[in-house]
Length: 428
Image 1: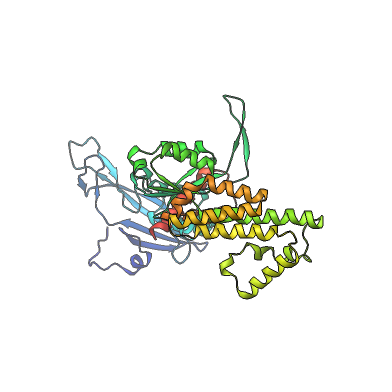
Image 2 (image 1 turned 90 degrees about the vertical axis):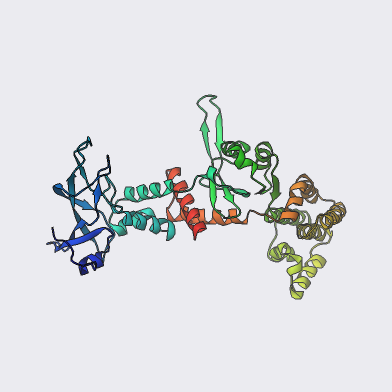
């Protein structure tokens, strides 16, 4: 065996740059592929007793899968088997291993890290990454599964604030329960996110209280007692599970979803009034329909020109005045959510109640009942200001993962990519 005479490696070893290995030979084969022969430079110890050995029993070539180095490379490792010099050790011989190639491994650690970085960090499809590295899809998935095992345990974390929202993994499906023979509907997933770090902590099947409740019940008692705030959208199922398993935790409702309730109310009023007045659906010749998006914009952000257009709409295409009344209710809801104290919020709520009474429409009354039903959570929102914005950001990243993978037949693979991507973004 040729031993290096200086700490500086030879040129081939420096270019190949595989830690704990040095290049002993290179060869260009008849079909143009390069073959690189390497040997380990680190000492090996017996896995049974730990004694370092230098007596070589035998050598055998082992083919390693490695990253492309200026193109595809076939790596041949002259793997040594050593005698164990500890006479009390029941193991007489053992094969060497390194950090890059552990026991029973057939690929280098840097290849697995590169595969994980390609799929998780760069957002490439697993099949495309496998093709570019010259490996199988199964090796890419195995690298992802191994990386997922290194993620921190959720129970070992101590989050203060959670965010819960649903994400549609696939179309709704029905399955028959083998015990009760009843058909059960499986809804999209729910994403549970730490609002401090933005990391996805859990992915739960279904969107009912049972799914959230089972996930929270699986957490330790101290974990649940340390929870301070949970942000949700106006979902009665989420609130039911939180009241059962996190009774001491403050629950806040997301402001975006409340504003959306007001915009949906105004849209329903506009559509109903158009049918009553014109006897048809809205058309581009109708000022109300042509400015339908302007109606949904925040009133305090309108320019003078936009406000004049809106006043023209109310004057020319709102003979009953009911559309303007509904618009005022919608704007008062935005004003209520923008208040900074409970006293101001209570005053804004009284003003909204007056406007709802003046509007006197089924849509505005339904919105008012929703506000009253969620008033405790709205008060928490005004005081704390926690929203589900980070949950929505993760849902957007989840959609990109789904589109890149062109769909997933195995939900476990989908969940693995979601958790790894979220952990990588949090660490960055």
